[in-house]
Length: 395
Image (cartoon, rainbow, N blue to C red; front, side, top):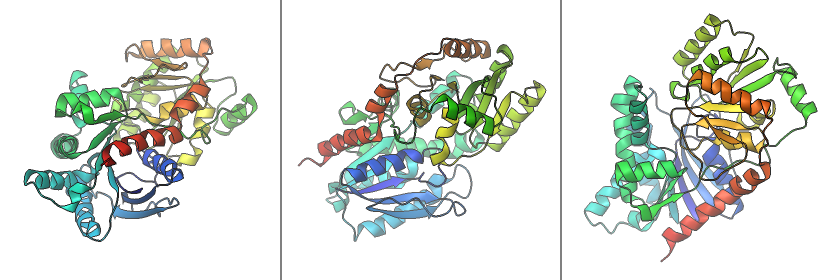
């Protein structure tokens, strides 16, 4: 099958959503599909990652935060119109808000009962979250989004979500919660909604022996006897990493916090000030952006992965942790499958977080690595997506 994938985040860099579409595409290529990828690209990040039977069409990313839908998305849309005049594909698979104007275009064609070739090509839209769900979660917790999100990015992104559920032949959601949000806030047709949870590269994210684990810890300035709490990902307010720092106050001194990832500069500065104020400099190790192929190292050095987030779709880091045999203590989402080694935070109070961390580490809980690897490999996820493709391409 010839597929056109519209996805803003494509590596490099490997931060954010990037690894998900890359890994899914790689698994789908192995099933015999070929791709054209329309994606965003930072001018300084280097050439986009290549895969067999895949052609990359990259667009310079938004010049200012929150302006995706009025800058890069507009450029992509006009290129899309021009490109589609001379290129046939069997299916268009878009992710998120990058394709906002493609959604509107299809909506208008449908409204005026057009017989355009565009509408004869099935459209599958992949939801990694819903903006309306994010907004509701923030309001519930008394938090306020950034000004540019509140007045520029999110209003347009909500329109993109709404138009997407109206024009898509199928909608894929990374979690049951995300699907239910689309039904609740956008009146999505449940018969067109499918859940395909995130996957994990089971060859990259593997469990290591204690000897290698100790060696890794020494290399990043940790002691083999330390109890290592890991948070890996983009550091932003909604991830509540500051609550993890606060939780350290309630834990013995051998408990150390390993923070891996880039993030919002203002929030990182706030974290640094918090660490200094609490005199925890010797107990917090912060590592910046790490290329995706090197990310397993941090998981393999940890005793527990903790994500005290306000809201999530289904974060790939959770599957990565479990695939490395490291238990995960999380919030902000609910997995459909029960997995040994996955625990949910009772609340986001620092004392509660500390108590649950200590309980997980003290009891040396086991992770059902084989089940994770069997159910959540990208190979299996690609087969699930293929079954959805079969539904929408059936004559």
